[in-house]
Amino acid sequence: MVFIGMDHGTTGISFCIMSDEGDVVDVFKIGREESKKGLVSAADELKKRLDLGDVKLMAVTYAMGDGFAQIMPTSKVENRGILSINGAGKVTGGGTSVFSELEELDIPSIMIPGLHKDSTSLDEMFRAAYSHQASPEKVSISYNALKETGWRNFIVADISSNSVNILIENGRIKGAMDACLGAMGVVHGPLDLEMIRDIDENRASANDCFSHAGAIKIAGIDGKVANMKDQLLENYREGDEKAKLAIDTLIMTVAMEIAGLAVVCKNDIDGIVLTGSIGSMKEPFDFEDEINRYFKNSYDMMVISSESGAIGAAQIAMDVYNGEKEILGIEVNI
Image (cartoon, rainbow, N blue to C red; front, side, top):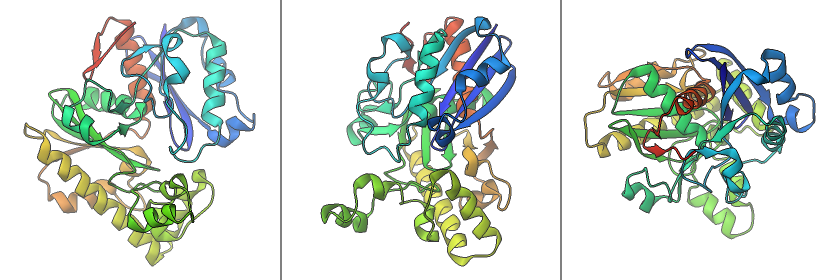
């Protein structure tokens, strides 16, 4: 028997197939644009790799996950677990088509919620401060980080198209900082005063601003989300000064956010876990080395797979199937 984890990411939808012994059998990714255009089928890709009858449980992450707060069977989650698709970054429809395909397969599945103001598992001050803190794949990333490190008090830095940092305290998610609040990612970032003025004066929508507030803003890059990271890195390799400033600024904002979360942890931090396409990067720059310039080796650091979202979702599926009643403080209700 096998378990499947799905990571609904910004540039694509990733899947992890895991054996009942917890071994990763395969990880693959479907581009959003390709899925929307019908060039690739999630169902077909899964059928190529396994007998669907062997799937005991699949754990799904989708969009913001702000419409529910417990891990639940997909069939019991209303409106695919979201309140609205507006203001959540560029919408391509690729993730929606994949979700529809998976529903038709009728595989036993559960959905992982996002972290938001109605998440009773979180510290009440985080819930009071921020309506939304992280989308569901950040939960599965954090679970994979917990499994990989064995740490109980740590910060997960997931740095890719957006940057979200999550604080785990005593093995429970205490809170997180969403991409529109603090640290820059490659594409998404915080809305500053200039952007707020642009929104108020109808020069841009909030969604447009959010989707151009990351490192690409500094580097002067625009285009398809799936291509922006590659363009930024190509410019960086070629010695472009704006690209270097963009990367350096991204790293600085991530360091500030991590430091802020460390301050509010009631316990000593065991370490920092780095993941995501940028957070796990070694070339053309080593993200771990670069961010450690700010922390001066004061924390242990561990880099985990950039596919930790899909891997962690598969681990959640396996543990829920085997009777786990709580994941990082989030109640399992099946």
